[in-house]
Image (cartoon, rainbow over all chains, first blue to last red; front, side, top):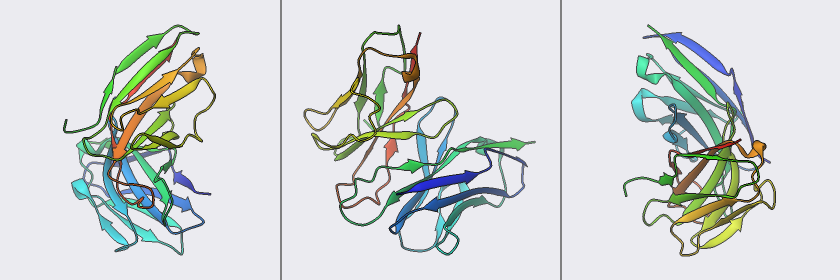
Length: 116
Length: 117
């Protein structure tokens, strides 16, 4: 079975500081991993995805994430936070391989606050 | 349309009423998913369609929940005899993925916020 744990329900950083949002996953088969962002009263927008190609994945808005199989982690980073990055961030996993529907298993989410 | 469209955006119903939530996926997307997002939580999977076939309904919480996609495009999630615990945001997502190719991203609508009084 697959599961996702996001460490830290709230993260607060200053504008211009490094953003680090943590995600650990559990999967019995090689996973596909995703990071989504959700702004208030909106749906989820894809930031980036890992699908067994390069382990360092670059996404939109300057975000990137590194897949580390040995640590079962897929942490999201951004070198310099911007006020517009304040939102809810979700890590999600789906099992790879054939015969899977692609349904996503989400973490609980991390609220990112950016202070001026 | 350019994205996934859900209607209504907000729905208030009295306990015991039936509700219907609509999802218009991106044109040409084979796969359609419904998720339920409780306040302060991550979305949880409800059901999956590949075209008109409902291939996975393992996440539906009770037999009061019913989903259909009769022509392989628009989908409707119906909740009968609503209860207060049904209050949540219901998200619809579509993707180009078909069974066996699950690395395609899902594109989400803005959701329907359901409040049961």
